[in-house]
Image (tube, rainbow, N blue to C red; front, side):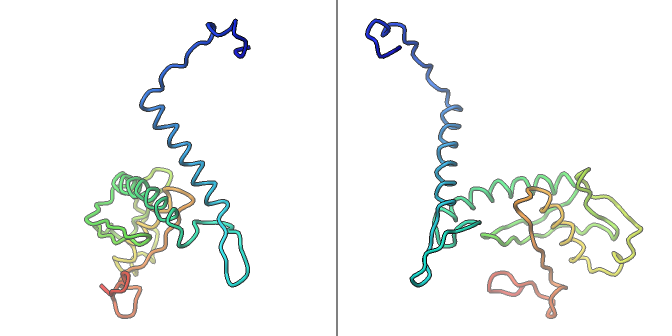
Length: 174
């Protein structure tokens, strides 16, 4: 229809996209590019070539860039959720996939209720009395963290879990 000369004047020019629409179009394009790269990544071991089945390819710069952006958002959501739950965070620092956290320890019997997104008291849990403060705190923070996104599930470590009472952080013991 528009290829015919007689219809040239019937063309309705498109409106200029807003700044938000331009950002959204760019985000969609970048997302598609990252997904295509991740889904089609191959690597070689010896003479054999393998197709990466899942996860971000180790050593691929794109994996690090994408994970930094993703985890920056996750960090914000986690700290909001912890505050919403009633946790008083003193320190939160993350390096790649390790976080170091300090928070006020809830009393024995405290647990995280995912539905209400709050710390609630459950005095019926007798074993809580025997747990060290750092273990109870780590378990609650882990539960909060694991409630953010199903694709991100955390592990926890704490000083009293280790025989020397120190927490391994990268190549240090603190």
